[in-house]
Amino acid sequence: MISVMMSQKLCASGRLLKSNFKHKILQSFSYVNIRNINSIKRELIFKSKSFYVPKRNFYRLFRRETKEQLKIKDEVPDQYTLIYRSTMDRYILYAQIITTFTALIAIVTTIVKHDFSNPQLDFSEFRTHPREVDNEIYVYMTAFITIVVILQVMISRLPIRIYNLPQQKKYIFVFHGNYPFSKRKLVCKIGDVVPLPETGVLPWKDGRYLIKNEQKLILVDRYFRRPADLYIMLGVQRDPDVDENE
Image (cartoon, helix red, strand yellow):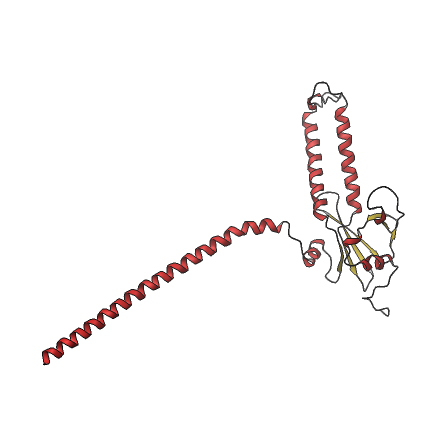
């Protein structure tokens, strides 16, 4: 009887040890699998982030800047309000870059190709066809210089942003400079901007203005924050955001 009881106890203890051992093995395997899965997840997340980083940097070049970023870029105080924002800002900059570098390349090429020991200009090396006229290079250079001058005149008349300080009735006009990545600013007050007569054949003939009788402008109505901002700047409408007693 005692031997039977001892054998039963031994069998029970053996089964218990076997189940504990099996449970520990499964637990260790599950822990290893979880660690492997977590490491794989971290690796995939890191790869996906690193894959999208250059794409985000590329899209950042074409992302629309916030008003705060524009104030910092234009060096305008925080109390000013942005009331005019041109969508042609980057197109004007790209045109400036292209024309500037093209002009530099043309100047450098002319200097390299020209024989300064001979005062007579010889542009025969620039010809692409032997039957071309002798003064054709002058026609090309004159046309190119004319395009550059017209472009610079247009750029000087197109403000890219206008800021307003209603309490002091002041405005800051921001223009592109005479060379790429440069800025030019002009400060005026309400009433300093006056409309010019509608003349010419260009599509913006109704958007021509004059500041302080010295600077001509081309303003586009849809670039203003609201239609009333233009009439407030011209002095024909009262600013509702400013108290008359101020």
